[in-house]
Amino acid sequence: MPLEGCLIMDYGAGSGVLAFAALYLGAKDACFTDVDSLAVKSVKQNAVLNNMTAGRPGTTFEVVVANILRGPLIDLAPRLTAYVKPGGTMLLSGILTEQVPEIRVAYGAAFHDLEVESEGLWACITATKNL
Image (tube, rainbow, N blue to C red; front, side, top):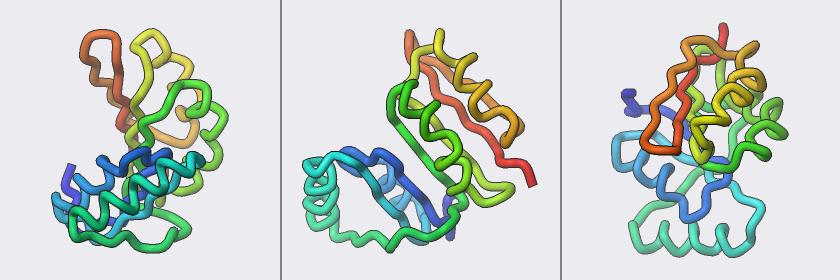
């Protein structure tokens, strides 16, 4: 997936590694968010260590990534869906392969081309938001 010039949202950023990787791969800007104050502190420290800054939250993004557990992914489906621009990409990970059907149900109405990649017990879903 080409990231050059894209605005990225890393939801549940943890250390911010997904957004930092996107910036290194040419993303225009990235927004990090996490409910854990230690994660927010970690992202800020990692930004300094990597000579990077991250932009303010926008209303919508070309790419939204979320590496969080099944429960929060399902609960946050309306919010995460709203962050993705029409035609934009959602990348969801942190889920077990057996949980993929539940994630498909939660996001299927707003997205198409849901592709699943798995490695061992873990899965990643990439999807394109409907226009």
